[in-house]
Length: 229
Image 1: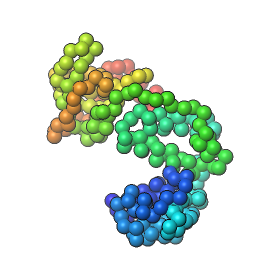
Image 2: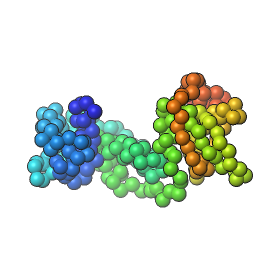
Image 3: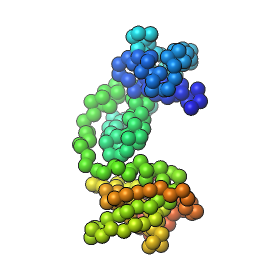
Image 4: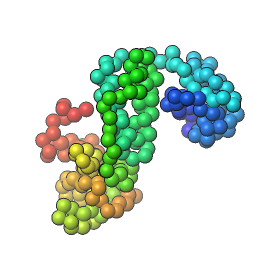
């Protein structure tokens, strides 16, 4: 991590806090010494970030005057908060943190009267029973275009071993569907992630572009690209 990346990460951690966080906790999260943490705090303060606190007290960002406010409506805030809260409940550990960090960034740059909409959200997410054991591995395989080998149990309770090319994840009401090119079937197939019994990432990547494969899959499924975001 470069120092610039570290400063951005520090700022993000501070934005996510409602109460002062100690220098020792911050340094531990960033993997740096407390002395380096103090230097980073001073650097952000010199750049215009309003960080209050001190040694033995803790630090907190009071405002971000150097960032322009986001001009969002009440319903836009509700929709964004609901979506990010859903991700923070129904994906893997890293993606949950990504959603929470994104929400903290939005909270930091919206006008004060809209912050209450995030803090007292009326649209809530209930407990999830989804199986996320392989979710992070699948996401990484999609990103890196890795071929993966899975042991799969279909709706007839028949087990099979497949080598597939993962290209997308689709949430279908109560489960995640992994969209992939199946080498055994030589065609696109959908796999419920909660029916995957075992998974291993292979060292090799698939040769065709994931974008091209997604386009072919959309055409086969009759999905209009202009309706997707």
